[in-house]
Figure 1: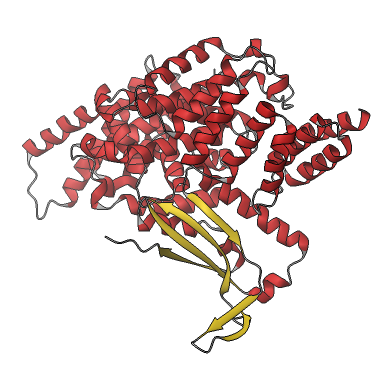
Figure 2: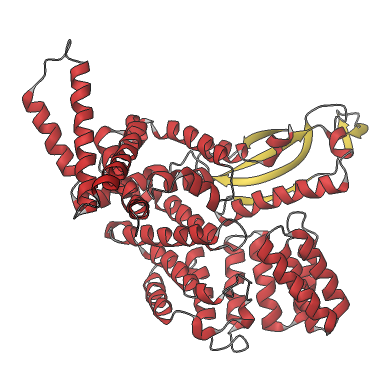
Length: 114
Length: 418
C-alpha cells in the first residue's frame, strides 16, 4: 500500500474561537474516524496542530507569525494514511470530519523513487 | 411464523445470492436492474403468499419467479431492439440456458463470492466497501445497514449510489476467470469481513439483534472464502478463528438486562466450548502460514483468553508479548492501549501506569473511555481510590452509549463505597 499525507485546512480564526465544549466534540468525532481507520490498518499517524506558529521564508530568513493567519484555508492538522489506490486515498479523505465543518482536505501521495 | 417473518428470513438468506446471479448474468452496468428484479421477486412473494399461503418450497418458488422475471426482462429488451435486430430463436434459447446456469447451486456460491470481491473494489474506502457488501452480497436493507453502523439512512443511500457507479467500470467484469485476480484482492476482502465482524461485535453502537447478524454473516462469508483452496487460506483461517473465539464468549459478556460484564467477572462456564474448539482448530491451520500476520496474532490473543481457566490464571506475559508483535506490525494508538492493558496484568500497575499516562497525551485517545477505564484499574491496584474515581468520571463523560454509562456508573459507586 502506498502512503498519502492528508492536509486538513480550515479557517484558523474560527478554530481559535471555538468553545472548549465544541472543540472536545470535534475531537471526539475525529476519534471515531481514526479508530475506524486504525481497525483496517489504513491509519498511520496524525494530529491536529496549534493554530499559531512561525513562518520563515527566503535566504534572509524573514520570520513572521504564521501560518497565514488571515487565510481561510490554513493547515490545521495532518494525517498520514496508507491506501490501496489513489482513488481509495481520496475516498478515505472524503470521509474525514473536516468536510462537515466547512474545511478542506488535500490528499498528497508521498513521493517514492520508482 | 408469519408470512412476513418467513419472507424476511428468506430475504436475508437468498437476496444476496440472487442479486449476485443476476449481476453476473446481466453484467455490472445493470446492477440497478438486478437489484430491482430481486425486490420485485420478494414483493410478488409477499402478495401471493399472503392470499394463497406459503408454497411447499418457498425457496424454489422465489428462484423460479426471479428467473422468469429476468427472462421477461431479456425478452422485453429484445423487443425494444426489434427494428435493428431480428429476433433470433436460437439466441433466446441461449439466454434461457445461461440463465438456468447462473442459478445452479455452485454457480450461485461462486457468483456471490465474485460479487463480494467486486464490492471490495480497491478505489472505495473500507467503510464504503462494507456498506456495499452488506447491501449486495448479504441482503441487508438500507435501514438495517444504517441501524447497525449507527448511520443515517440517507447517508447510507448516498454512499451506495456513489459506490455503484464505481462498480460499473471494466475492471469489475465478473465473467473473466475471477480466481486469478481474487488472490491479489483477498487482503482487501478479509479486511472488509474483519470490519463487518468488529462492527457487529463492538458493544458501543447500534442495536443488539441486527449486530449479531452482522457477526454471523461475516463468519458465513469467511467460510465461503475457505471453500476456494486456491486462495491460500491460512490468513482466512486466522480471521475465522478470531471471529469464532470472540463469538464463543458472546453469551457471557452481558446480563439478561443488557448490563456489560467485564472479562474479569464473566462466568466462564457460559463460554461456548464447541466454538472455542473450532476456533482453535482454525488457529492451528492458520499457524501453518505466515507467523507475523495481524489476524493470526489477534486470534492467538483471543485463544489465550478462551483457554484460561480463570482471569487470574490467564497467561498475561504471553498476551503482552503478542500485543508487542502486533504493535510492531500495526502501530496504532488503539493497539498501544491494548498492549498497555496486557502489561498492567502481566507486570503490574507500576510498570503499566507510565505507559498508559503517556497514551493520555494522545489527542484522539486521551479521553477514550477504554483508556480511562484502564487507568482507573491501575490506580485501584495501587490502592489510590480517589485517582481511580476521577478516571471513571472522565470515562463517563467520554461515552454516549447507554450500556457503557451504566457500567461506569456502577464502577463509580463501587469506588465510592470502598
